[in-house]
Image (cartoon, rainbow, N blue to C red):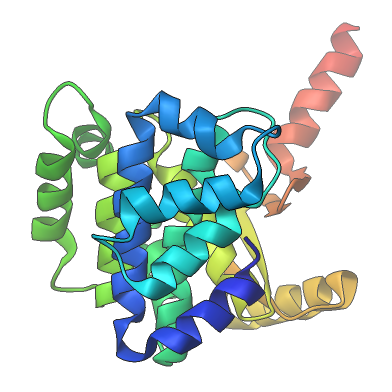
Length: 262
């Protein structure tokens, strides 16, 4: 389901946009533990009308009409594996939260808060592990812990996404999921998200110059987040989607050592 189509659906929901997100999260949770329904909704030999009827029978009594429309759109897709539909519904729920934030004029604020949480957790390993440890607390327990720690500094959209990430992300993937959501938020705003790692704090002027260079290279406005990594020694590491540019001193020193040994 494309963000553009989801935006059209949410426009019909009015003030109930977040209700659509909650509906989609609930359906994703149901599908996650019902493999037979996953198969039924992704079976390529089954008529679309049959899939829509199954969606209506299972979910129409408990979700909104707009949410049912979204589910019809989702099950019309093509699937490599039945469980892929779980990821697609979950992703649509996250996009619904971000798009709701955009409708409310707080999407960039939500993006910045998601980045801030990921940066904070990166430097607070014990808390990060506690929020990611599937054996220590239940999903709701981890989500409640995250809310206790961060609710005073987060808006509703970012807090909802954080609770969802903590409750549904496996160990070692929490930071990646938060960054992924920040990237999605930037994309919805028409910007490219860039991760910049440096050995030393960059000045505001250096950041401005770097962002202008990146905007020219990418032919797009950028949203950059900066992280300190002293082990780089000097230079920068820049990540833009799947592209990674490593201009750090540590990497150049390592290459020089290998060339000498080799």
